[in-house]
Length: 475
Ligand SMILES: *Cc1c(COP(=O)(O)O)cnc(C)c1O
Image (tube, protein in one colour):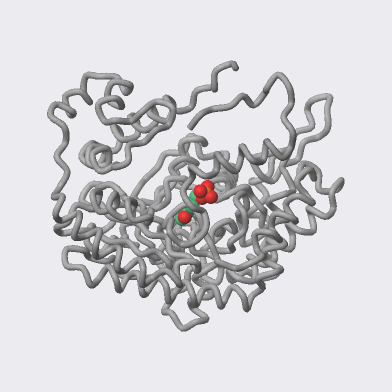
């Protein structure tokens, strides 16, 4: 994409700036319409975007830094937290915070757990290896050692006894998922939380993905095991409103069972000549825009609206899983939430992802991890429902094309290049342009990333992103 000066010599009229922006947005994957099975959550409700945008605009310049200056924001945050308490099994003791996203909620849950134990010099976090990468990020940021517990590579389940056995006197937090992002499976929260409680350790449930669907799916009769604050031993839980509450990006909620558990999450500082800074979350100045947009979205959709959306999403998830099941060589992970994940015993998944993309369906390939095979991830939202028949036909075609194509052959010498060359050279050999151009077909790149170890994968992708993130040249 051509870059433009964000600081032209002479300012540009508003209407033209918007035209430019619309033109740039044309290069993005589609955020609406149920063809992108990751990153975006589309309820397919007419008028909702307009409402959220109007609410966002009304509060965009309100600053969450000081809720006493902007009581509207305090009220809306308390309303959002109250809604999460209602949905996630809280009671009159439950408190919480609105954060900017799932990662921030998780960092804060880990920080609160760490700072509750200043006497522990080398704190540790125990979690199944399937827990979200954001928890590893929290551990890295906060200098907490990570004990990841392997899962059975066939069932993808963690043994709660193995989680319990990993808890040591240095463990400040046990975390688990409801459900996991990668495969959409719900960890055995009850025995994990019981083990944590028995050891006197906090237990966080990462329901960032599923916190706004699982309770509704249960009301629809799906067999959802207990996972929320109703489970003894669960001390905190997170839910992203910018996922299945279908709000614009930038809103998650972190709940704690009691105010005492939340206390170490806060940061207060008066030891300077300026204002006393008191922050519940990582950011200090925060826009009221996302919070107002979320508040408007929840009030507009309502409990009955979310139930109806969950029903549509469940039906779409079932139908998509059914379409995948019909294909020989593809094996669907048992469906417990709104994710359809599948492995392959024949057709090359990375080629299949390209073939689907060529037909306008954007899926998320996931790499091998230890004995866990590579898989395809599809986040299914309500907007997918009217597209199922179309998807099924295109999937069959894409599988046939992928079979005809056969598995990816890595270019000769690429693994040697990997060992010796810089990322620029490697990127060149793989057809990754500077300036953000990805090749039409990603199967070769994905195959390479799939065969290397996670540490190499990290190094390559960090370096590649760093290549992309360069300032636009001076006009
Ligand atoms: C999305 C997600 C996160 C991270 O949330 P962000 O909003 O992307 O920061 C954490 N955990 C789970 C299970 C998720 O699905």
